[in-house]
Image 1 (cartoon, rainbow, N blue to C red):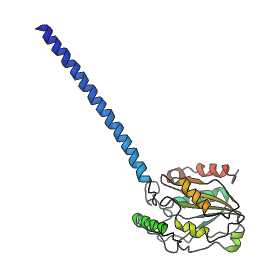
Image 2 (cartoon, helix red, strand yellow; image 1 turned 90 degrees about the vertical axis):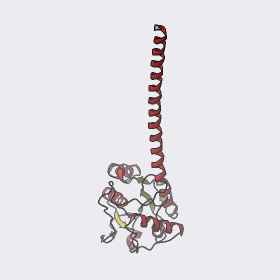
Image 3 (tube, rainbow, N blue to C red; image 1 turned 30 degrees about the vertical axis):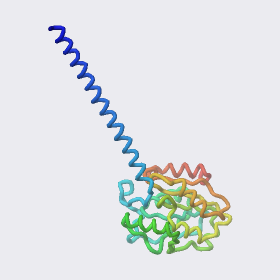
Image 4 (cartoon, one colour; image 1 turned 30 degrees about the horizontal axis):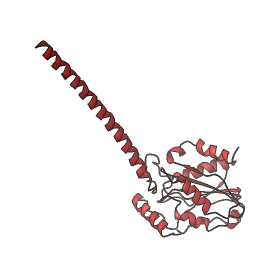
Length: 239
């Protein structure tokens, strides 16, 4: 009788241990599966690459807010370097200003005649319609012809919209003669299509004498100004 009781006690202990092991295994598998799914969601959300939402924690001040904004930057022609940029949420503007502070270049904001909607969803819809219709949004100001002829180097920057450069960049590049000039692309992006957008700016300026390696940054990496500084040093813009 004692042996039978001992056998049953031992069997019950083994069974309890097995149950505890199974519970732990299921917990580990559940955590792993959740982490994997979370990564997939993040990657999936980044594939549309729509305009970034202004007023996010990474860009709370919306420095490029279109409502009552200042007049577009007017190049003085005192430098042989021009930084031309289009910005909606303000991230590309920040990057352009960092380039100017390091190089002493002139600054020109590519400003549309018809401003893009401030509402995020509405802006994405307009941007997509322009891309699909191969539109050429009109620009409200222009670089003076005499000043343009004096620029040897032209930086061209924009955000990534729907996998590529906004269509207003096409308008800008088709409005000027890039013969004899060096073009340097730059962009800001949320998660993907950085390289494609930099390459698109190169494609839009085939008449340029040369193209230097471009740089794309997220709004978070823009907070560290050394990223722009190091890039400018690598391409020979500063020492």
